[in-house]
Length: 53
Image 1 (cartoon, rainbow, N blue to C red):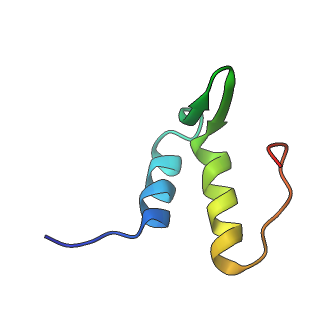
Image 2: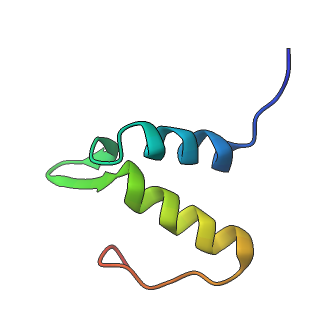
């Protein structure tokens, strides 16, 4: 069985359906696209501010 990096999985899900929720906590929701942008920024060391910060 091969392994896939978590960031790759998030990116693939974001491209498949960016508007769908990736994370939910009560009434707060983070879309797949927003989560992808957050993880990309962390991986390359240039995390951008988002409305979730």
